[in-house]
Amino acid sequence: MIDVIVAGGGPTGMMLAAELRLHGVGVVVLEKDAAPPPFVRALGLHIRSVEVMDQRGLLERFLEHGKQYKAGGFFAGIAKPWPDGLDTAHEYILGVPQTVTDRLLAEHAAEAGADIRRGAELVGLRQDDDGVTVLQADGTELRARYLVGCDGGRSTVRKLLGIGFPGEPSRTETLLGEMAVTATPEAVAEVVTRVRETQKRFGLGPVGDGMYRVVVPADGVAADRSVPPTLDEFRRQLLATAGTDFGVHSPRWTSRFGDATRQAERYRDGRVLLAGDAAHVHPPVGGQGLNLGIQDAFNLGWKLAAQIRGWAPDDLLDTYHAERHPVAAAVLDLTRAQMQLLATEPGPQAVRRLLDELMDIPEVNRHLMARIGAIHLRYDLGADDDLVGRRLRDLPLKNGRLYELLRTGRGLLLDRTGRLSAGGWADRVDHVTESGDEPAVPAVLLRPDGHVAWAGDDQEDLDAHLTRWFGRRRT
Image 1 (cartoon, rainbow, N blue to C red):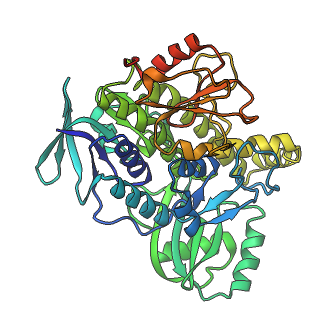
Image 2: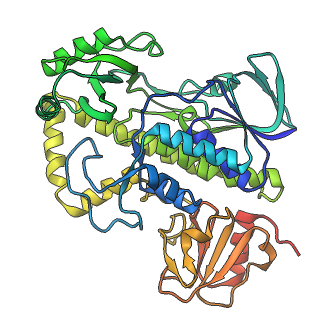
C-alpha cells in the first residue's frame, strides 16, 4: 500500500510530496496533464514563501532564476515605497515565473524520491477505515493510506467527497496571454502608463523573445472558462480598454480567469485532505494564490508524515484545518477588498484615494505588506504569549543560521538556558543551546514548519508541549 497519493502536480502538490519524502513517507503524485502548463499565471514568491524555500535549502535555486524586488504596489496596485522594518531576513519579493517554480519544485520532489506520474488522472475514490482506493481514468486502481487533493479550483477530489465550496461566483473576467505586438516598446509603455491610471486590470509587459504578457478585462464572464479566448477577442478588448490593439499577433498561449471567491467547508474528510486551490480560490490580485498553496503544503506535510510514521498526537492532523482554514478565509477577505479598490466606479475610487493617503503612514504600509507576504499571521495555539503561534524570522546563531537548522524537517528546541532537555523526543526534535540575544526569551520550541509551539524556561511545561506536538516521550 502507498503511504500517500497526492492528486495534482502543481506547486502545492510537489511541495507537499517533497515535505512527505523528507520524513521517509512513500508518495505517488498523480497529475492528469502529460506536461506542465506553458503559461505563466503567478509571477513570484512573497516573503513567507521565500522563507519556506530557505528553510528547506531551496532558495539558492530560486535566486538563480529570479529577481529580487523591493517595490510597493502589491496591495490593490497602490504604488507606495517598500516599507521599512518588516520582521524578516528576506525583505523582498522574488520575481520568478510560475513555469520556473513548477519545474524547480517538481525537481525537488523527484530528487526527494516522490513517484511522479504525469498523464494519470484521478476519476474516482472510495475510503474506509484503513485507507483510500483511487480509480484512474485508465481503469486501474491504487490503494493508499491517505489521499490529498491538490488538484486545483475545479478539484475532482473535493467534488467526489461532496465537500461544500461556498462563496461568490465570478462577476468579472480577465483575459491573459502571451503574444507579439507590432507597436514599438515606447508606444506600448506610453499607453500602458496612461490606461493604468484608472484601469489596474490592464497591462502589457515584455517577457522575452519579442513576446508580451497581455492582461485586459474581458467583456462579461464566459460560460466555460476552460475555452481559451481568441486573438480577435483580445483585439476587441484592447481596443475597448486602451483605444489600440497594439498590433497583437502570433499568440503563444491564451487564458482567462475570473474573480470567484470560494473556500471548502472542511479541509479533511477521514483519510482525504485538500490543499491549495482545491481548498480555496480567489482573484489573483496581490499574487497570493500560489503562495497560499505552498504554505498549506508546508503546514500539512510534517503533520501527515507524523500520522504515517506513527508518532502523531491524536488530534495533530486536525490542526491542519484548524490553522489553515482561517488563514485562507483572511486571504479571501483581503482579495475581496482589493477587487473593490480596483473598480472604476466613483465610490470604490473614493475609498482607494483614502487608502492611498492612509498608506503614507508607515505602520499601515508595513501592515498591509506583512499581510500580503504572510509574515503577520499567528496560529491560535491557545497560549497568551504573543510569540507562540508565530514563525520566527531567520536568526544568526553561533553555529550558522536558524533556517539552516530547520532543513531536516524536525522540531527544534532553541535553548538559551543550557539546562533544558528534549531527550525523550530526540528522534523528532533537535536541541541547540544558544547564547545569542535573540529570540528575547529563555527558550523556544519550534515545530518543523518554523512556528513557535512553546516559549519559556520550565522543563515540566516544555515536556507537556513536546507531548502536545511531537507525541509520547520515548525511553
